[in-house]
Length: 184
Image 1: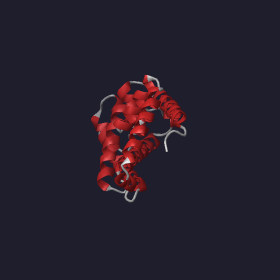
Image 2 (image 1 turned 90 degrees about the vertical axis):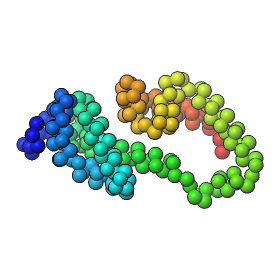
Image 3 (image 1 turned 90 degrees about the horizontal axis):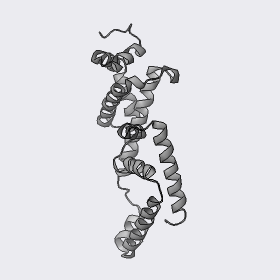
Image 4 (image 1 turned 180 degrees about the vertical axis):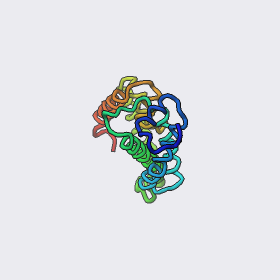
C-alpha cells in the first residue's frame, strides 16, 4: 500500500491485519508524531516517549485484527493505546524510584526490630497470597514482577482481556480483605 492520504485508517488497519507492512508505515506517518507527543506529555521524557510510541506501533501491528470499529475510530484506538502504555510506563517508573526522606527508610536504618517487623509483614502477605486461587495469584505476579499491562498479560496467557481484568480485580479485593488491619 503506498503512503496515500486517500486510504482510510480502517483500510490501513485491515491491511496491517493482513500483514501489509506498507499499511503500518502509512499509519506511522499519520500518527507517529502524535503518538510521541501524547507519550511525552505523560512521561516528560523524550527517550521513554519514543520507546512507548515504538512499542505501541508494534502492539497495533500485532493486534490489528482485533480492531472493532464499533468501539470507536482508529485514531481513538491508537491514542487510547498510547495513553495506556505511557501511564503504565509512568507507574512502573514511579514504583522503582526510591523515596527520598521516607520515614520508614530512616527507622529501618536505626531500629533493628524493623527487620523482624518486615519479616512478619512478608509472612502475612505470603499467607494472604496463598488464599488466592492460582489464576488470580499468577496474574497478579505477572503484573507486579514482570511489569506487564493487563493487555500484555492477556496476550501472554491467551486469556480474554475481560477475564484478566476481572481475575486481577477479584484477586486484589481478596488480598485487601485478607490483609485488612494486619499490615501497618
